[in-house]
Image (cartoon, rainbow, N blue to C red; front, side, top):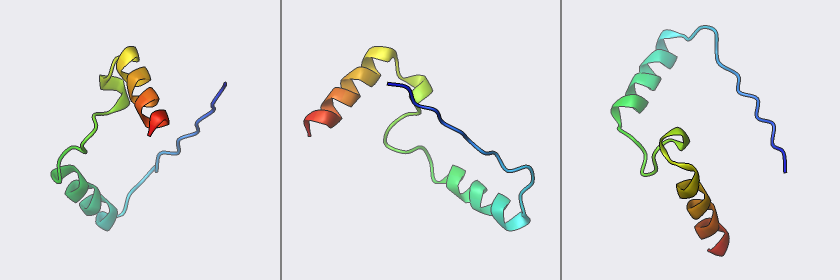
Length: 53
């Protein structure tokens, strides 16, 4: 299986957008960590658990 992901990053933000991103950051991390922080086997385990549910 191949997956192609295209991520677009805004080149400039308005003042309001910057404020909203600051609030989002201040709210703290989500329950799950970012994918980069989990190892390969942890990702496989999470996938398997999700598939079983």
